[in-house]
Amino acid sequence: VAGTVGAPEQGYAFTGQVQAAIADLAPFAALAGQTVNGGLRVNANGRLRPDLTQIDVVIDGETQDLNTGIAALDPLLAGTGTVDAQIIRAAPGSLTVRDLRLVTPLASITGGVNLVDGVGQGDLDLRIADIAPIAPGFSGPASLTGTGARDAAGGISFDVTGTGAGATASAVGTITSQ
Image 1 (tube, rainbow, N blue to C red):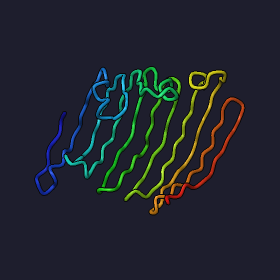
Image 2: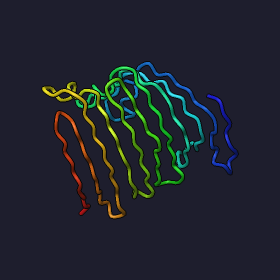
Image 3: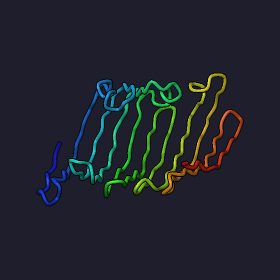
Image 4: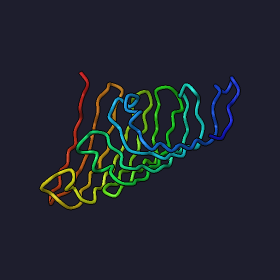
């Protein structure tokens, strides 16, 4: 950890760099509310307030054999991977994730999201080198790309296209909150 802590009128904001290497994430499962295993090395540079009302942090790191207990996800996270993103929270109720990139031997995930008071949009691009580990009986590359948005009434719209195993599927729709 290297950095400075701002004055009270600056909300005691920390500006600097944090480096961490966690060989086993299992002790963090309760915090995550989800099974989590594997290792993580991360570098974070930027500024944040202790109450997390303001964040502007760039993260880059390396993952090792991440495991969430989710059968369809875990094979995609196996092996050594890299993760990068910029996370911004300018005010309560806002969240921006830019340049999200997670790359493992089997998958590449990129995307981002921009929310203000629960309203916003996001995008995702998933590329899988071989679908066999998550879809037994099928093989070859697969992809999923999509966008989504949430409106002020809580409605969600989406546009998703997936390809793989010799097929293409698309879905466009809206889910309304009643």
